[in-house]
Every structure is written in structure tokens, then in C-alpha cells.
Amino acid sequence: MIVRDGGLDQPATAALLKAHLADMHASSPPDSVYALDLSGLAAPDIAFFTAWDGDTLLGCGALRTLSGGDGEIKSMRTDPAARGRGVAQAILDHIIATARAAGITRLLLETGTGPMFDAAHRLYARNGFVPCPPFGDYVATDFNRFLSRPL
Image: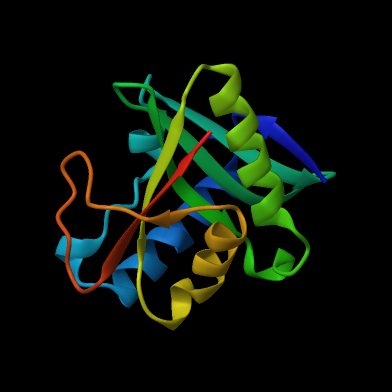
């Protein structure tokens, strides 16, 4: 498995992000879905990463640079066929290393609640993320959680 910078131009990435958005909307009320589409992830303040096994896309994730030394993890997604292979951990490790190299001192994220998000909650807890208040323009609801981790 190789984690690479970029990949937004790949058809497999577009398909994975389309499935990700569909799952987010199926699992949470519309006002609690903060997932970004392909164009949102192409913003200049976002670094996007993809994990590959040869020509097969395994997953993706992104790092948004915020003010005050903060960074935000966005759009973590593993292809269902690749789950259980450590894809999310590899992408998260890459995001953390990239954030440190960029001088980011704290990572933040917003994620959903419910069974669909249980694996994500376990991943983030294993990696030292703890609950925190909402940040940026996010609004707390019963359908989201906010987590942070110092670097």
C-alpha cells in the first residue's frame, strides 16, 4: 500500500467520494453532513491524499489548514473492499506527518454518530483524539462529534 499526495483527478477517487457523500447523507440529517465533494476538496487550503495498491484505490483523506496552528482532517474514507487492511491508519499516519511537517500543532475533526461511524471513532481514539467543542462554523447536533489531538 502506498499513500500518495493528490488523486482528485482519478475516476476511482470521484466514485469513492460520490459513495462517501451518499453514505453520509443516508446516515445523518442534511444539516449535519459536512463532507466535501470533489470540488470542495480541491480548495487551496486542502491537501488531499489517496492510498493505492497498484492501480486499485483503497481510500482517501484530506488535511485542511486552519488558522492558529490548527489543521482539520476531512473526508477519511476506505473503500468497502479494502476495510480491515489498515488503510485508514496509513492515511491518518500520512496526514499526521504532513501536518507536523507543515508546523500544525493541533488536529481537529468532525465526524458522525451511530453504527456507521463506530470504526472511525475507534481509529481516532486509538490515535489519541479526544472530544472537544465544535470549531470553525460547525454546529453541534446529536448527529456529530468533535475531536482533537495535539501534535
